Image (cartoon, rainbow, N blue to C red; front, side, top):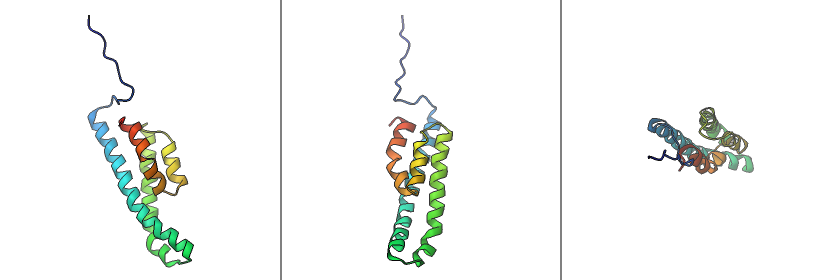
Length: 113
């Protein structure tokens, strides 16, 4: 008599291609988040120092990075890879802080890692 296999809830049951896509999206979020953080820091400095010239240089690239982070984190929600907390955290922290801080939890939810 053979026992039926038990499923470990910590291990995703999706196809390897789906897991590879999840890993790529998570890696993209992390890379974009780090680059966007490097663009975001001069914006904060310019705001604190009263230097509007930094906004002209770093504003648009940061905005693009922010929209990419939000779009990718929302895409993960739409595919049920992680919960709404990830795009909300990314939105509330204006992008890179939330995307980077939430990456580990999202990775555990999406990949079971």
